[in-house]
Amino acid sequence: MPVSAPDVIARESWFDVDTGQLDRRIFSDQQIYQEELKKIFARAWNFMCHESQIPDPGSFFLNRIGEDHVIVVRDRKNQVQVLLNSCAHRGNTVCRAEQGKTRSFFCSYHGWNYDLDGKLLAIPGEKDFYRNDVDKEALGLTKAAQVSSYKGFVFATLDAAAPPLEEYLGWVGRLGIDSIAARGEIEVVDGIQKNRVRCNWKLAVDNLFDWYHPKVTHGSAIRTGVMSEADMYPMNQMVMLGEYGHAIGGPGVSEEKQAQLEEKFHGKNQSDSADRRDYHNAWKTSHKAREILGPVGVRSRGHPNIFPNLWITLGGTQACLRIPCGPLETELWWFTFAEKSMSPAARRDLIQAATHFFGPAGLLEQDDGENWSHSTRASIGTVTGNRPVQLTMGQGHDEVKLDPSGQSSIETVVNEHAQRWTYRSWQEWMKADSWEALIENHSPAPSGVI
Image 1 (cartoon, rainbow, N blue to C red):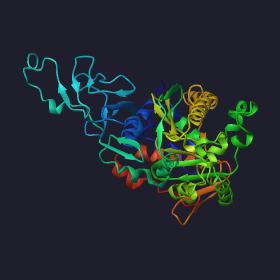
Image 2: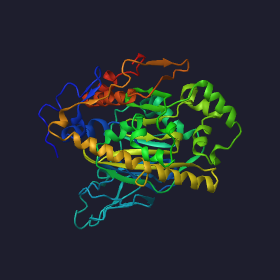
Image 3: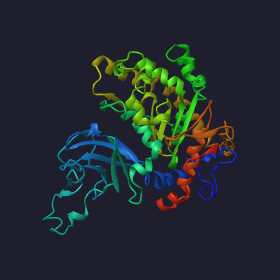
Image 4: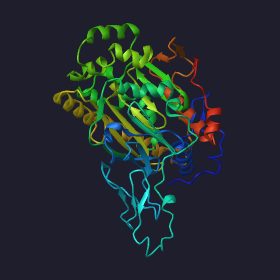
């Protein structure tokens, strides 16, 4: 583990917004990582699960907020609770199964037992060992400061001062979730794909906006015919930037092309489309989708990221959490979403595609993971770690266009606008000592030339 230079935390700037240069040490420095856990993950609204994963009282799902392990559970009153998975006695976990249904949570160390809302129910030896001298009301499981849901997506924050979820998401964050929810009644396919990559979590985040790499990194997918060259190097790019670091980047279509697609797919059941490209086009062509996503959002075919670490894929069929496991390792969690109305054949094809493209067996992410790992490794070197990352593509050459609807976009060629926005926002989170300071000092969504 690299040793932090004395000035790393105190530095005025890790990312130079004027030059697009980024200090590589943010990908490996332990002090910076510890600050991220406190100033980003402990304050942000973090995605926990989809409500379809916890349908009944007692249904639970284990997740993480930074390095804090949490239980997302529906209590006896049908309310969603987010509880830290740590016994008040000695800190042991009280739930080991990743998902399931239970009547209570039991500590396997000394037998302390907790209700679904986190209340301490019973302590072995309460009368004989503790002499009835224990305040069980004060020794329940620690709860998240706030829990909220947007269109079935459950989020939690450990900071009571955080703004309401929908305000935090803004229109760009909401659009990211809407890109899944607009498909209709959906559910998470059982079995979250999980794997670890030896890379910093931020590299796994900024890559989702990167349409410069696919033709090179994923050349094998092109050569084998799994993906076309047009898929891997789309020139028609659309970028949308929101407050607090939310962004969407990737391909987009013109109003004219969108109108053509709406005419082509009018009345068709996109859920049962056998063609993957047709599926991605079709589900955004209904009148309902335009109403939900807006006149600009409906034309986006890019990847949303809800800051800090929730990636939503093309077509809104999958979402991925990039969970930090120290500065040099990241755990990737892939959620696959299927419409409940899907035919068995269409559902099978969707799951097969999800497994084949991303996750531990994914053709594409195996390529990506190698690059992220080597890029992280370079940040440790005495010399290589001091050479800045260059994020200058398109800087000062494009313009944010505001639509009368209030949505805005940058429509251009391949670029690094979303990456720069991510690191600019990351830096603002890291410099702010409180939500009050972050609200006051964060950058508003940009306008004009960018």
